[in-house]
Amino acid sequence: MASKTFLSISLIVSLCVAIFVTQGVAHMQTPPTVPGIFLPGSPIDLVKCWSSLFNVEGCVLEIAKSIFSGKFENVEAACCKAFSTLDANCWPHMFPLNPFFPPLLKDNCARIVPNSPTHN
Image (cartoon, rainbow, N blue to C red; front, side, top):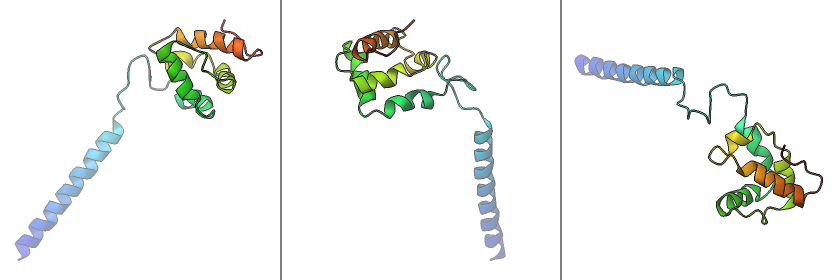
């Protein structure tokens, strides 16, 4: 009976050690990154970049529709105001597959919202 108890306790201890060591090693490793998009220690905070667009209801959906259709007339003034306040350094990180989209949208927004700055 004592040998079964000792075996059970040693098995439980072994499993706990294996679980905690695996978690510790995984915690110490750096997460994989996509080169050019999410660089570790990047000064660009993507959450901060996207937050102004997510604060305007439907804005992200309007921008997504514009990306896929190439038509900017469905982007409303509130969304254009939010987009025009974005830092230009956010654009390459927010739209890495289409670098020409942000300037096009910003120029279109300058027509919709007269006081918004155009892309330089």
